[in-house]
Image (cartoon, rainbow, N blue to C red):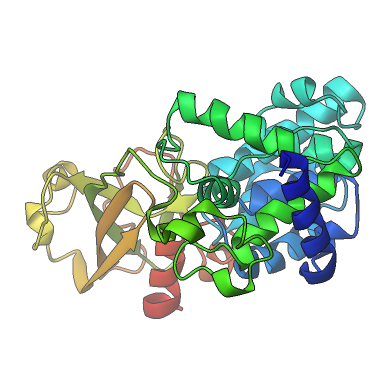
Length: 357
C-alpha cells in the first residue's frame, strides 16, 4: 500500500465525517491563520466562541493591526497562552506594513512572520494556497505513530524528519489542505489519545499498532514536563476610588495583562507580615490606617507552572487615604466598572468574580 493510499482513505473519511466549523467554510488566510493560532493547545469547543467573537471585533487583518494591544488581550481573555495574542497582533501589523495586508503565499515566507511556526505556516500554505506541505501537530503524530508503529520519541529532531517525510508522502496531489485537515480531524475524533475508536477506524486493517495491540504506547514521548511551583502573594488594596491594579510588563507569564500588587515568595506564606518585602511598604506597620478583610487561596495550573496564590484584601479605614501609597510600579486604583474592561489572567478574573463583584 502506497503512502498516498493512506491519504486517500483519510480524505474520503473526512469528506463524510468532518465537523462543520466556520474556518472550514473559507480559504481566507486571515481566518485560517486565526483559527490555527487560536486552537493551539485549545479544545475546539473552547476556542469556537473566541474565534467567532474575535472575528466580530476584528473582521480583517487591518482591523486587528489598528487595534490597541489592550483590546486584543481583552478579547483573548480566558483563552490562555497570551503570547499567542501578542504575536497575533504583531503579525497583523507586519502583514499590513510589509505585505500590504495580503498574506504571503509561500510556506517559507509565512514562517518568517512573527509567531508563525512551521505548523501554522503549513496549515495556511496548504489550506489557503494549495501548497503540498504537511502539518505536524499532536493529532498527526499520534495517527502516524500508530499506523506505522513508530517507536521513536516524537520530541526529537530525528523523529520530526521521520514523521515529516511520512506525512508528506501521504498527501494526495489534489487538495492538500483538505488532507491536512483530514488527518488532524481523524486524530481528534477517532485516533484519540485514550481509548481510540479502533473498531470504527477505516484504517484498522492497515494499522500496525492495532495489530500489535500497543496503541496505548504510541506515540512515544521522551521528555517529561516538570512543573515549577510558584507562590504568589497578592495585595488586593481597596479604597474609595476602587481597587489597585497594574499592568504586567516583565517577560513573564501574563505579560500585558492586569493584576494586583504582587510579592512572590520562595515558600508558602500564611500571614501578611511574613511576606518578603512587605515591610518596605509605607504604612504596613500602622494597622490603625487599614483593615485586613480576608485571605483567600487559589491554585492555578499552567502548562509548566503551578501557581499557589493567596489574596490579601486590605481596605483603608480613612476613605480619603490610599492604601500604602508609596508603591512605585505605575499601577493605579480603578473603579470596579473599569476593572471589568481590563484584560486579566483567568486567576485574577476568577477571584474578582467570586470575591469582589
